[in-house]
Length: 203
Image 1 (tube, rainbow, N blue to C red):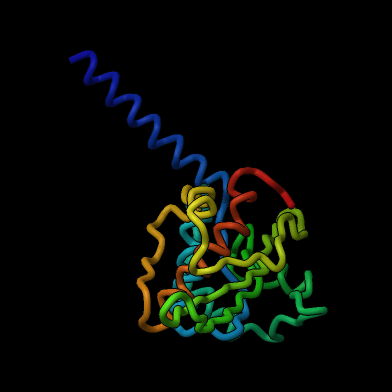
Image 2 (image 1 turned 45 degrees about the vertical axis):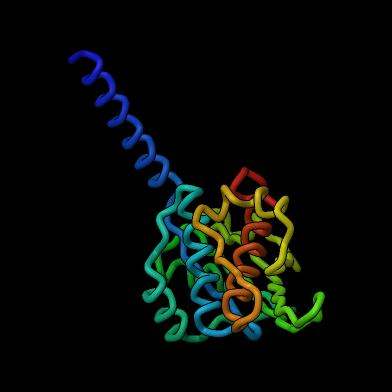
């Protein structure tokens, strides 16, 4: 009886700790993100992957439909300088959606067919620029540029980022359509790009 009571108490403390950590981390919004190529389902998986990663870090992720609507209706819309959102517009958008942080960036895909052995094989490469804007600091506190993930990455890379992705990698089989390869490639690229941030890096 005493053992059960202790176990129950410890479990409750663990849940409370997780709740407090999430509250302390604050709310985070995913956007703005621009895309080059990649189909609709691949883009949706990219956002879902980011969501899972930042939740793993302890943040409360704001509903994506709401964020997308606010981005579309934002007037004036976010301006870009040298391919990156203007800092003042990021601050304005974060205040509009009541987010303590924004995850923003660019995601692009290049999918092609290569000849392997006796036949063709489809390979997709995703290239990611990702950054974290901190509204309290009014600055970009983390950024990675040009991070690539290939749908046929080696096992060592997958092991490195497995705890960051926290959801199963998209399974890729030989032949067939390009969508699974785009999805797997972008999971890997995002895992590489955000792995240092998850483990405490600021830049």
